[in-house]
Image (tube, rainbow, N blue to C red):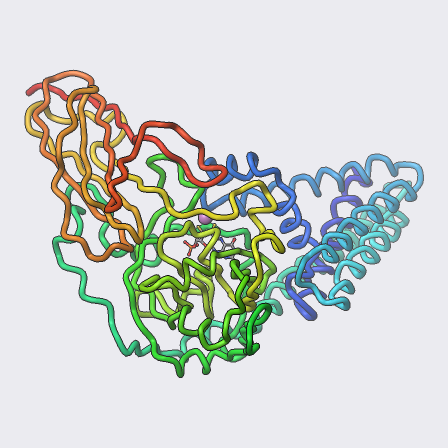
Length: 496
Ligand SMILES: Nc1nc2c(c(=O)[nH]1)N[C@H]1C(S)=C(S)[C@@H](COP(=O)(O)O)O[C@H]1N2
Ligand SMILES: [Mo]
């Protein structure tokens, strides 16, 4: 029992000490977070998909919780193997410490001296184990002193962990964000009130920011102040550039309504949202730096090391609407949306276009560089596939027989939606009514009135884009370049 306590408290002390020092030197060097981030990067893609599907946006909390449990178990083990001598437990603490050091060194963005955080963690872990073990009494009268020492170290660990968290947050990025007002020279046309069928179950046309889907690999949200931004543009260019946030603000700001979608969406999935993005024209900026012939990939990097590759051709095409976005829905980007600046390119899935916390843009080639997800077997190029989704009825819903409205969304960003059809129980395809098009870079909502006999039914939908392509029922998984197939919904019509 005593040795278990020694193991648990030593592990806690080690993690907390590392977290505290990391808060001082470099928050991402916290051994706990570094191991978590490394785990995310090393997780096989199918398991990652499973985690996102199962836990959605709580996937990171689940990971941190799981790590805490594993570490606690290791602490218990360290105690159990050290009943006679402290050495096995100290050795285990040392090995864990080395893992922390390796994880911090493996982070793409750590500076060399940030390694001091996991080193402190190792030393504290081994020393705490040794000291507490030596305090553990062989006789009952010594118990009180031992418990006091243990409680003191546990309390110290608590204070250190909280202190580390506070220090990591001391960069006042919220104040930096609050101080910004974005004044687009050209605002997006007002969204007409009938641009959605939200009363019939579709999402509202513009997604409120707290409802906007979120997908990224960041375990802790990067905290980069606008005034600290140095956005580098380099590689196969005529003139390198380093842009500050003020440089970006001085350029003409435009506002555009754009729908963003994630490649990991299953057919009928939730990872699609729409916002008014405020930003600067990306093609214009690239024309200023002068893209050298032969460069076909824009490789972008976020401050936490995540990378992305976008076809130069897509960005430079007339009317691409590609932008460096500084704001969403009238406010500066929220921190989790990539503050201070992110990229948006309509018509491409987010993982090949929408880099958040953007700090580096390198003109290169697809041959020369594989970004984060391409290294993990996703496609290097991924234009958004023409898709549609049924939002009403819900799966297995019971609806009144007779007249019933089905409704949903369809999207084919940058091509536009031409029509959406539905069919019931494998019958003939029927037309639906579409909302007025806001622009070709956004989703469009549809509805159709059905007349239903009582009983079980299946409704399916399919969209046709402006290029004349109609969705087929060929089923593809999200990996490597986006799911395909018709969305279908099984429901019951009830008489009376
Ligand atoms: N830095 C960074 N940017 C990123 C990602 C990431 O993991 N890290 N994920 C991308 C993916 S896969 C998508 S779908 C979009 C999602 O943007 P959102 O979270 O604002 O909805 O961001 C993209 N930008
Ligand atoms: Mo994504």
